[in-house]
Image (cartoon, rainbow, N blue to C red; front, side):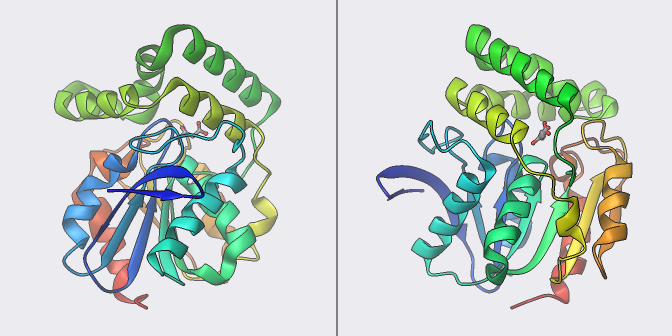
Length: 264
Ligand code: MLT
């Protein structure tokens, strides 16, 4: 599904009825990564997924290059759909975007799920890594980024035993525009530190992490869960960074338990 908002085409899906759930994807993927959650939840909830700029079906505005811009894109879509409040689920870069949403639009957040993400800003070394990856994207395009990212996104056991998952994730990356990849890297490198925000979060919060996540290791999730009052941490066995896609049954189980007590 597509809609033009402020002159820009935005890809999204909106299925089911009930409490709105809004899913925000990781780098350098698209709303397709949430298909296992859409399938499991659309009969009980209103499930919305969005393509951030330059991903999936969404156009890109090159100068919308901060996570606050990404947050606005999500909120503008919800305004268009007439949704005042929702439960938000963000994985990795989607989690960084969720911190921006909470910082600027806390009133829209009924509850949130921070999956495989971290509160800290990039270190200087991390920023240098973003710059060199942006250069690779510019010279060699999405296929080179897929080669670099797949071992960071998926657990070694997924890579070894689930070639179909590897292939689906590769295809998602190949559909992302080079501009989208570069703008994500610029936005992530410039993102503010959100550690101070953690103690200010008052909505119900679930933290989820894949046991074998190398991109945002379990320690990052413990750090967030210890500082967000009343939050719960769930670890997903045999999953890497893309825990929702590698182990959908365990991820959906954790999500459904949380949602059961936090409907709107
Ligand atoms: C993601 O999955 O969104 C990225 O790995 C996040 C990051 O590079 O910091």
